[in-house]
Amino acid sequence: MTQDATFEDGRESPLNLGAQDADDLQVISSLVQDAVFPITEMRWQAKQHRFGLLLNRFRWEDDARSRHAPERVQSLLVVDDVVAVSSQGIDRGETDLILSLLSIDFEPSEDGAGELLLTLAGDGALRLKVEALDVTLKDVTRPYIAPSGKIPDHPE
Image 1 (cartoon, helix red, strand yellow):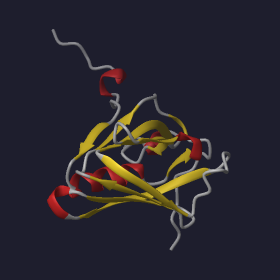
Image 2 (tube, rainbow, N blue to C red):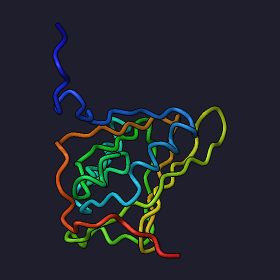
Image 3 (cartoon, helix red, strand yellow):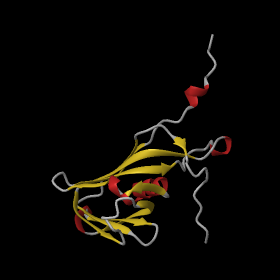
């Protein structure tokens, strides 16, 4: 005799994705679009050649949004093989600042090296010079109801 499936059996599992080429990066970029994070949750570990962000990511992949409120989840976005980090339009001294990530793009150069451009709302940007494209996105909490209760919108 077989047993009926339970609701828990169909529950989505946390994301744990990697990108080592531009196509993979576009998947991660679409999943982190409209993620928000306090400026204090950015870290560059120069000796380890690692840059990380703790994001509050909107769950674009949630197919059940029509049945419940929009959700976010805390996720780590980690970039390895980083040799330099620069920013534009960001005041690192403003510790209460909340940033919104719009996209991640890769500009390749020689031998797999290049630059990652993290575009932020409000004309801000982060540029990471990398020896190789190595990006990881991993959910680290359970989903929670988005505080705004809304799906992010991009009016044209």
